[in-house]
Length: 220
View 1 (cartoon, helix red, strand yellow):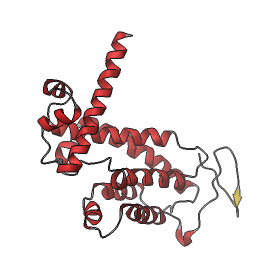
View 2 (cartoon, helix red, strand yellow):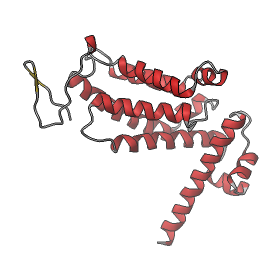
View 3 (cartoon, one colour):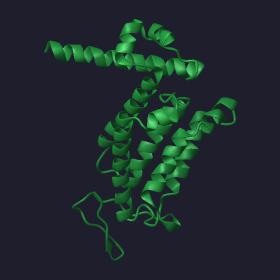
View 4 (cartoon, helix red, strand yellow):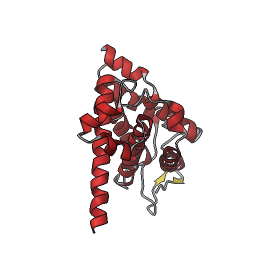
């Protein structure tokens, strides 16, 4: 019991450090982030900070991994009766709002190679892509998503949107507000997936058949 309590305290402290790092990065940029300033903002000593993270690169990785895991948790909690396209739209919108409206992703200046070669990041990223791929394939199977689309390429397009710092610059310059940006990107991303002619299949949970013309549509 005592060990569990200590672990809970450590996890809460880790979250507090990551939240403080996000705040500071939004205020000053990643390059200006220092461990001294972070310890002060998080309300911990430097030895405590270094006990959690050896450097700010590790903090960037941990923050991104945490966000991906939260997205995975959100995917698993979606209403199972939603169609594949509706699930993808909810996930895309959640991620876009998190980055551009709620500003939960704030490590755009972190070294890309450090993040993408990190083993923990690679594991959670692949898990996320596998989950999204399964939804995407279900959409193609029931005719809701154009069958000719390559799943990995389509999902990479979405990932690239999240990684592109020029969308942030559009907001900062006043060229577009964050809500309009999210709405536009969501419509483009989702609209580009539908079958030719704009028609989509009727969603039927696995085990329940429904015919559209001569074809029975089942998705699960």
